[in-house]
Length: 362
Image (cartoon, rainbow, N blue to C red; front, side, top):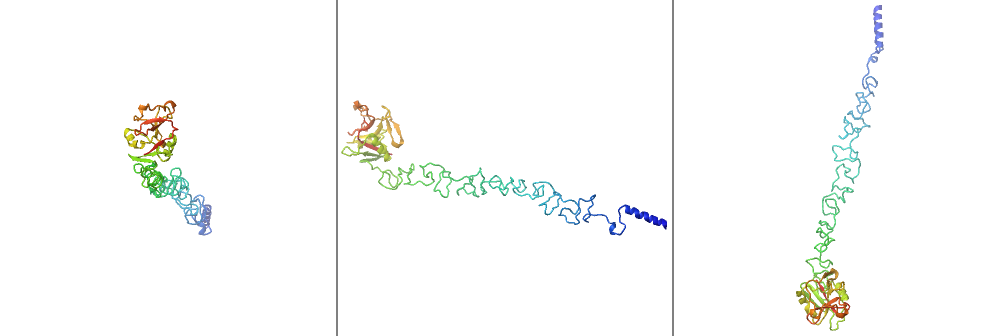
């Protein structure tokens, strides 16, 4: 009996030494995860619950980013890896446009939310027609690829002369030539606009009034002279007359008057033209556009606003009178006139002499 007690005593004292409770059944259980009793040898933590989404998982591990378990209120996501561009970053935040990390769903991500650089706020590559003005690259961007709405489909601002007719333009022929069918302000050329349309109009004086030299259909009128002659598309006008006209002028005054009506003193370039204008000289000696006032002996035709051209091969000097002779002994014959004896022969005279004159308008 004693021996059994002693055996029982030793057994009891030995179990107590092993850490087992001897008072009752509850004191004889071992620590387990989620019982609220932290065993530092076996557990990282123990919060007494089986909630996997708080700071301590239901395996009694500390909830950390990358463990694949969402820590509610701390992590936005947790996909169990540290890959930054798969939608959940290495810091367990949800990848979003503008965070500087290129996600699989993004074409670009430059770390900002600016719509004026090469990457939009939707993380799409900027392109012409996306509706966002890319500074330094685009002049405009109206969000479409329509070419005639003010912003071209290459995102340059439409201008007159680019060859594309815009809503506010009547025409656009791709140039800034003012003498064709489309003016350089992209308005269709028309008679009376003041711009000569080459090959279509003979003249255009900016109005539709007849009797002012250019009629309402933009054809040259020939009327300013005392005598007028139209030949080969040219208008020849004799001004002043020897029978008391009172409109006779010096050569320079005559030149100025011709220029004022869009003409120049007559240029006689060949025998055919000499014959054409000869009737105007009958009884009327008149200035022609020939002179050597710039340099003695170097005759040139004055063409008014169009400049001047040297005397060509054709001449009709009154050689029997020794012309040109620089006005004989006077030595000041720098301007030429055609004789009024029916021959129309050329002679030189002082430019100050008051004579009739013939204007020519192409």
